[in-house]
Length: 156
Ligand SMILES: [Ca+2]
Ligand SMILES: [Ca+2]
Image (cartoon, rainbow, N blue to C red; front, side):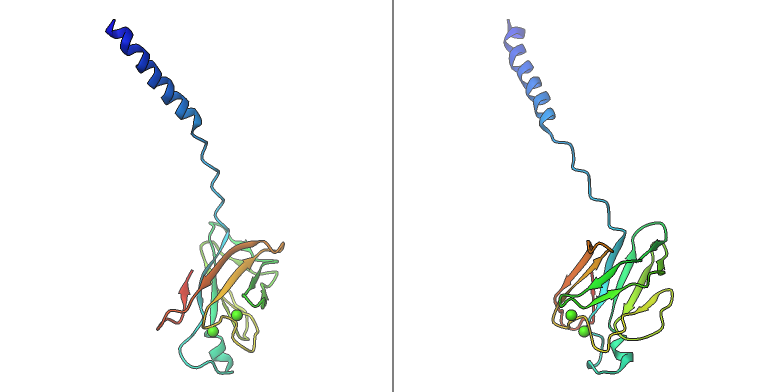
């Protein structure tokens, strides 16, 4: 009798648990981590914003290969909020887990330092957005920052 009285609600609970489990949606496939990250932006280097190329080059954006293999940046570009665009050299390959600095001014490209070639600053001292886009203009990663007093740059 008791068994009979309890069997129904217990069975009911069990059925409800099974039903609830069935209702749990499968976890959405996590978006694959982007192969490259905007790692940081040195947007306001120490000193006044002069036309001096060396000073302009103290401003830079860093891009990181977030994977365990070397990757080409062919076709990739960096865009600021005002649509200034930098194109990576088509032959440039970034080693695994490595960061390259893209300096704003002019200079000779090397393994870990690239040069935008601009004769004026790109990353606004009062805030900006950097977008890393692939050859199809798809945004791979981006970084929006607001200035912080006493800081020359931001980690993204
Ligand atoms: Ca700046
Ligand atoms: Ca800008």
